[in-house]
Length: 262
Image 1 (cartoon, rainbow, N blue to C red):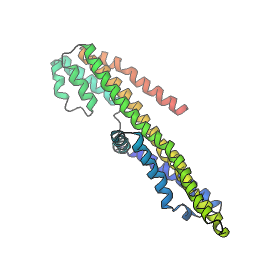
Image 2 (image 1 turned 180 degrees about the horizontal axis):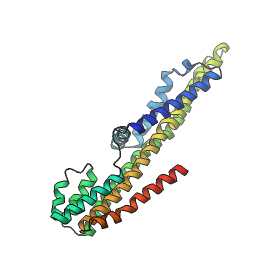
Image 3 (image 1 turned 60 degrees about the horizontal axis):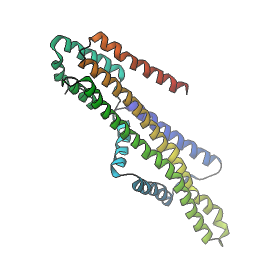
Image 4 (image 1 turned 90 degrees about the vertical axis):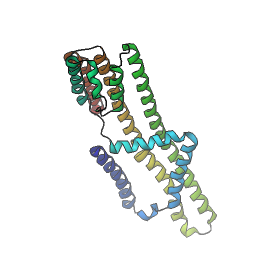
């Protein structure tokens, strides 16, 4: 379980909600103002309805699975893959390429299993690369679709918050003669807007960013696996395998450094 990322994510959400609540109270507001089931229904129910219209059920289920995956699965470290391929190459040198076949079921990753299976299949290097490239593109497109669902939700939620605010103002205007309660009614009307903007910027967009970051890591991992599988298929020595894969670790370090600078 990816506990570190989950704790930070929950802490970030709690911090954002707490800051908004503190600002509201410090300006003389009452937290009970936010307790409006209608506003929650309009923003989140309306966003769900818009997503159902925009995307097939498969995409919505995939996005939910990606969110759960962020919590439950720790991504396979690239640093662990290089020694694994070196061991595969060493075994192939000593016992033949077919000896790697016994390691397929032990591989902790489905794409890795696919690459190992193709590398010992006897197919040409071009066929192996094309097959793995297609699988990698399908995975990348799937990941991007999941991100698009959350980004779409981030676009719908604030708009539906405005809809909720308009509905609240309509209710206030219907009771225009009761001047004493107009101020409170107008304030309550904008709660839906806060829910919409808050959900977009504290939930949907951050989740989309996290899933896209995971997708970039997974894409780099698949590239490394493809190169490692081809090296095995070519009968490369353990040293050559290490040299061919070392560049991916350098690329990962460069991406991490760039994200830290940004």
